[in-house]
Amino acid sequence: MSVLYLQRRTMDIDDHRGEEAIRPMELTSVQPFKECITISGACLCAFRRNFLKKDEVGITPAGGYRWRDAQSYIAVMWLLEEERSRGIPIKHAGNGSEVKILGRKVDGYYEAGKTIFEFHGCFCHGCVKCFRDGRDKPIHNNSEETMNTRFE
Image 1: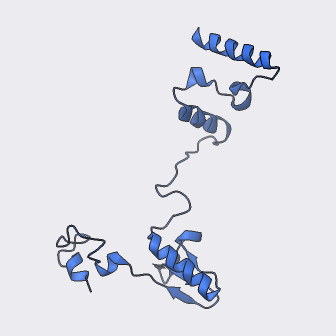
Image 2: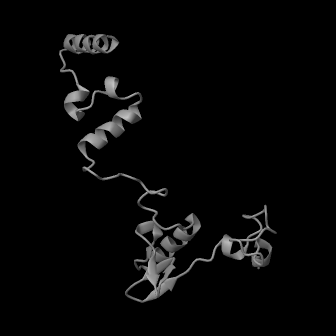
Image 3: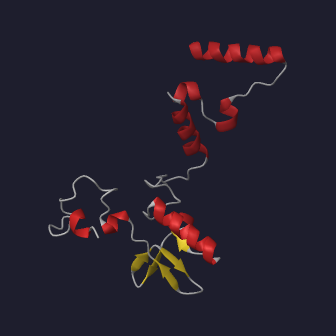
């Protein structure tokens, strides 16, 4: 009952202005006040009904589609600076994905010059400033390697 009242009231206001009412059902084939509780729920319902193909599951990766490979911000910034200073295109996680060379992913790769770019950041070197806590704990279940042993 309240839904009908709200729709009728909206139409009265729009008719008073002389404008045409926007009806969500006509645009999206979703009745947001009947089928959904939240705005995000209405958007998801419209997406599933109008864009998602049958028997398909839409799952966004944890890091989104752009950052398929985990690479630190500072590493990408370094690779972008190398691209700019050398005037060459380098493939990396920030502009697509990392390249595999002999079965191993590399941080950056310049195909024409067959040049590999590797950024060994704070984690590789056991930086005291960035990794203050748990420096004596094993890394990756390796009892011999800790942040203290990595520190140079």
